[in-house]
Image 1 (tube, rainbow, N blue to C red):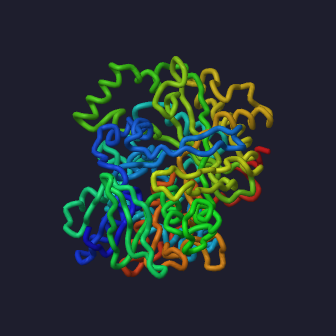
Image 2: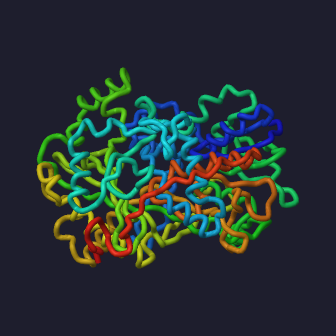
Image 3: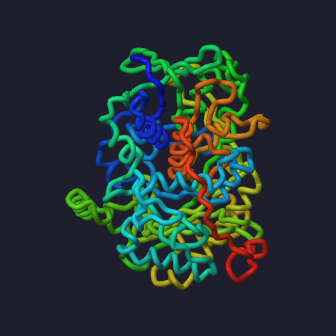
Length: 561
């Protein structure tokens, strides 16, 4: 293949953004390499089918963790997208930017310039918000963001919000705007009833550009380095090995698992890790693959007293009706991910911004889309959002086909175990409010007998699941930070012409789902790569409970201890 100015590895949540933005310059020649194939498949495009692509090997790398020692040695799935759009093509389409304090925290940890005021213009640039632009939301960006069916198709969505208010928490009209904390409608990346992945939003409109070359079904072996400079990529396609050289930069956007693995296979990473698998260490960067973070969640499930839940829509006839309406009109239950109401709360007094997130679902089912039990039910997905446990990603071999070692060390820190106890107790209190009385039957899980610290800990260990938000394995940081992999422009330390741009660059995990902040990072770094002046910071107010030091929720001092 002929040389290019830029080589991007990975056509996922970040890579598609970069490809679209860099090729806006007609003089910039871009090669985009993707390990998977097309995303043009009904189970990807149809929002209600969200569980199917994640459980289809064709669209998922199929990574699994090592036995997790603090989860009774359970092995958990770690799905990552393997097609155009990457994980944005197989995720739950939930759109959460994170709390403004998350980004202020990035800056405090050494990511200078990555505060909320600097990031907000790029969140706005990326989106078209269905309710219209304002000082927080964008109105003409590539990614369509909406509220699904706006809670119209099931009364339990509003009942959940009302229950949160009854329990003493605030209401928020837009958790991606002025106020994250509270209960309100949830947002999703759906455009005209179709999944708005980055492939759909960014890549497909620009694929006709002559300065973009997309190569799918490739297995990247390594970054080619000469005199501590990235000069190209070695990759495999159809059983043959090729190289492509970069005149300006190589950009890794292979995700929080793929990017550190590629760096390590290329000789950039912890010296001992590379030595153990026979890879020559070119740059000893201790942080590559370290600092791995994720969100854990549990499913709180109740029987539903009225026959109105999604469990009544799982039969062949009902599914056919939903599918036909979606195929013909792109409307109805087929056009939503079903997470249409949510909540963000603080687990105790003294915490400045929310650390627990709720996704409400008017059905009781598993991630594979099957019913959790016979009959009608509802559930919330809930978990602490700011874990202190840390894991790692490491190569097992120099072979590009070998799956990596992945260990999150979930719940290794007592702080995380304490937060789950609070989470269970606060959640049960919310779900027992009178607003849900007309719908709430027996507690299916955890079960009303799970009340003591011992029982909660045991149940969480056996039943928690990943929210599929791995991140932070190639973090931005200050020069003096021994575990920082990247500078503030996402350039790899001590290696010229090499960047990482994806969720691995986060210093700490954000307070919510990761697709939105990943897109934001790619938008901002694309301006840096192009040498453009960064968008002016947006100095807007944000809501913080004025009494957060003394109260866990509005009007009281309850601490959930």
